[in-house]
Length: 186
Image (tube, rainbow, N blue to C red):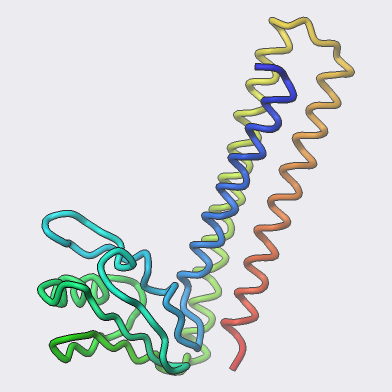
């Protein structure tokens, strides 16, 4: 693997880490209903943990309500159990054919807790990006010794890797800042 390829591979992995941050941020509750809150919750379906988005139709017909309509009615209890076991702090209402989740207005204290949770998820993204940088740097150092790369070339690639890392950390911060605005918005 050429040295430039190491940088490109690191960037691909960083993009995936950023996508994970985006998904994690979408799963943090705001004052309005969003199907993304529950799509990734896993329910026990036929003995296998399965994401809700594969088991049911999820919609937000009103700003403060999510409706989950399972394709198989026998999964209602499992879906209800998954919601109760999650950290969403929502109580499902099961009418025998679908589940309704009413999203209450957030209290100031709950908003602060959600912002802390969001910061934690963004920081996990930072850690992942830095870990990817470290692995790429280790690969570069190993190649430097075997491929006889000049010190200047190695330094240039090191700086390129650092710029890449800084950019992805900044993008993760932007995702977090945008989500934080949604959470604190009354």
